[in-house]
Every structure is written in C-alpha cells, then in structure tokens.
Image (cartoon, rainbow, N blue to C red):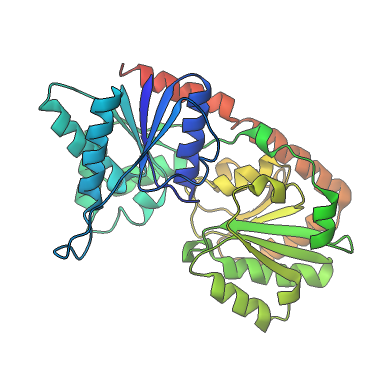
Length: 372
C-alpha cells in the first residue's frame, strides 16, 4: 500500500504514535509518506519505504495568521497525485481531518477518490475540539472521514459524549515497540544520577498544565523523606519553571534533574525504578505504557484511559487526580520493598506485551484493506 500519514511532528503522543506506526508499516514493505510542517522527532532513521513531505506556509503581510490548513490541504493533494497514494491516515482531528476533507473534495474533481481515516488522540476531543470556536468543524470533519479510530475506550466514550458523531468509532489502542524498551540499564549512567544507590523516580511529558507536574514534585518531596531517591524530569514545556521554583521552595532541588527533551527515552527508563504520571486527564497514557515496557511500575492518576493500561495493585497504583498523599504512600510502599518492586516490574512488562506493536499494526492494516 501507499499510505499518507498526517501528524504533528512533536514529542506529543499523537505524533509519536503516528511516526512509530509509519515506521512499522514501512518495515512491512508499505510505502509511507509523512506530511507535516517539519520532520517528526521519532523519524530518525533511514528506510527506503519512508518519504517526508514538508508543508510550507508562505508568509504575506496580509496574513496575521499564516493559513496552515490551506497549505496542508494543498500539500496533501500534491503528494497524493504525484505519489499515487491509496489512502490518507490523519492523526489528531485539528486541523488534519478538516484539511483532509478539503483535499478529498479537490481530488474528486479530478476523478480520484481517496479514503480518509482519522485517529482521535485525546486533547483534540477533550480540550481543543470542545471549544465552540472549533467544535462544528471538528464534528463535521470527523463525520466525513471514511473511518474513525480512537486510542482508548475512554476516548471513544468522551467523543460520543461531546460530539454528534454519526459513525462508529473503532478502538485501536496505542502501542509500544516492546523490543526497543527491553534494555539493561547502564551502571555508569545510573551511578552518575544516583551515586549512593538511591532509587530513581521519573516523569516524562510536555509539561503542560494538564500534566500537573507540581504534584510530581510534591510526591517526590514526601518520598525522599522516607526513601533516598532522585527524580528525573524528561521533557519541557510551560510548567517547567513552576516545578523548578517549587522544588527550590521545598528544599529538594539538588535531588532533581531536568534533562530536557530526549529522543532515546528508553536509555533513561532503563535505569528508573518508578514512573510518576499525575495528569488531570490522559486519553491513553503512552508515556506510562513505555515505562511499563521498560519494566518500570507506574504511580498514576485514575484519569481517562490510564486504568485501561495501569492495573491497580499489579503494575502500579492508581489514585484520584490531585491526591498527592495517596500517590506518595503508594510510591513509598513500593520503593521500600524490593520483593514487591520486582514483582511489579515483572507485571508491568507482561502488561505492556498486550500492547506490543506487532499485535496492533495488523489491526490497522486490516482497517486499511477495508477501503482498498
């Protein structure tokens, strides 16, 4: 198949999943064409079946806001015609689904029909899409897609709750390349972070307000009083400054490292003992799944789709959003008991196997074939 994938190229879950899906499809001899405004961060290796097409948005004095959606639709048309694509798979509804609809209508005028599959990822539905500014276009674009998928049962329910969707939404869960995350930790690396054998806790995200990273700092402040520990923050974003300030106020800044955005996150997860994800909402929680694939138990909120992957009392613990006391208690309990921690690590890996990329990609291929 010749497949066009439209996504955001950033570290967010939708871009990561779209890129990993494209790479896996290319490995199975499908021709994959990425269409976005810059090269996706996870698209960091050569494959003869992978092509990248940059969306260029001209700037004119007339435009206060460059019309990205129009440029995207035009680029889609160009790529589809000149590379004879069989279908478009767009990730994240805004603005990709509406741009795909426009491209599809343009192509119909030339006698070419192309199926459009839209995958919903989370905040395109639960946050941005619900805004009255965008809701009518989001609803229309989703309904005009030939097929709609969501990355969790929770997101499917939320979509039907907030939008008048006229078609079924198929749940195809997020996935992880388990083999990539089954790495042995590098002792020298661990000793640099934790020179005296401290436990290593970790959080990774885009540091938006919805991630509640100040809760991560407060949890760690409670843990470090009971268990010698270090905390690694991976990623960056608008709430980083607040987290750094809070860590200084609590007197624990020397025990915390902010390591910024990291493409090879599996190298860091390999030395972690516990992963903290305190989000107000997660449509799925890909960061948690990647941690589990590396054998790292997860302390998380019970928001959104997280209970679909993090099994309370087996792979980690779930608590109400904002319940720092409960999350701290569970973290201390787990880090204080070597036998329990090892059991949870084993359970986490076993649970992640259910979401291995080799189980999920064939489901997408089967979906594609329904329209070809």
